[in-house]
Length: 372
Image 1 (cartoon, one colour):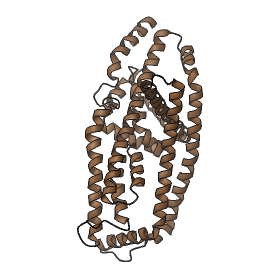
Image 2 (tube, helix red, strand yellow):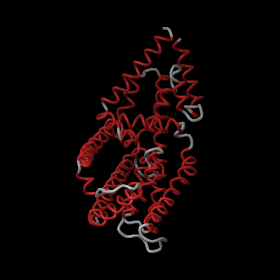
Image 3 (spheres, one colour):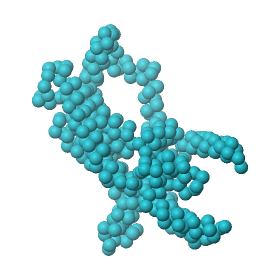
Image 4 (tube, helix red, strand yellow):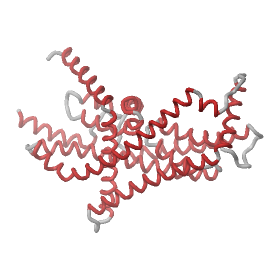
């Protein structure tokens, strides 16, 4: 097969795969979320099992499920409580937002500044809120489907070893496939676990800072920051912008803020932005790389491109899953000589397989020699 034919096949195959991922995004993204939630629960269960030698694995798995479900229910409760608090002070928030709109129009020498009510109920605002409502309804249905998928993944787990034995009757090939699967699982679990710890640390420090600064509804904002930090790069930027935006429109600001109205509110928002950004930058750039180590091993440019591509293909679920999905692709591409160059381009250090490479290379060489 000449190079031109091979290149044409690659282009066609890539187009077919991308089309399949986009057309089937409603099913595939939901199932991918379920798989990663399943891995998170299994990681918790494995950790509990290692800590408690007296607890059976089934009991550890049940505790892990309760922890994850409890965290999810707690997060939903925080969001509901935050929305209700904003609803109680809606009139005061509207007044502050109208003042900010007026200031913005005055800054660029424009007249007839619209009010928040006008912006919300014009044609563009109605389309925006209709989109939000549809997305919320779809999310509720997807969450139920994710939990159903997770339940069936646990039920099917006991038969995976037997199926693997039947698919790969040769011991060497089966050992190689199992090793690749274990490496992918370890990489994804380590990434998800590290990201959870980092998000929790940033959230805790930000919550305490927001309380000390007098930002209203700090718990709700902290919960949003926790979720946003799962989105690589862009999530951290948005997480740093959310609290100061809410600080701009909160009805009351602390008396210790310097300046006179309306300048004091902008000074207050700048202080909030500086503190929140400090935690995002310092932990994200100094603590997170040390904790994550080689579990991600993706180029920074690849992380941004993966975020954009998966976001276009699968929307918000794709943005959350962009990093672990790309790690999985890198590990799979590294198993074949014809696609290894893609894995090298995706990796940060040019070594997409890490510590397991030498051992797996020996196994691959044995299999190739036996087949020849």
